[in-house]
Length: 149
Image 1 (tube, rainbow, N blue to C red):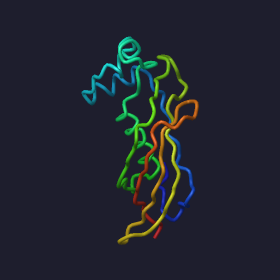
Image 2: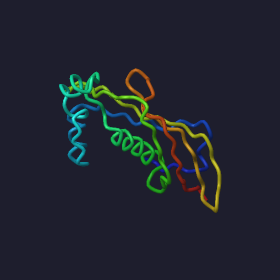
Image 3: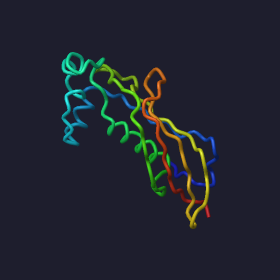
């Protein structure tokens, strides 16, 4: 991917979306990597019958990781992600096991651009969306980008 430069960024610019096909298998892999074996993320019967959820739900930390992936992909290797925050305001449900349709989409846009102490910053509004377009995890990010000079 080409390097993004501060000079080329404008307020209102959209961040390249990051899409994922999230299935129960993806949740189990993430649980194994993070030692996060919580039944509402892994066991449909438990989620539906005991916790009264519609299905297993995607871990908040996984949604956060996807937002981080979106930002680092967008800013490129010479960019630095200084801060990322997210609020878990909605539940995301994984798609069917053999699905190839994205079930989670990360999006964002630039809200501010400035220079401070010689560094070139961009502030962004970021979020995750369901297939239906419902925002479930709004957040913000701050990155430092290189300049063309």
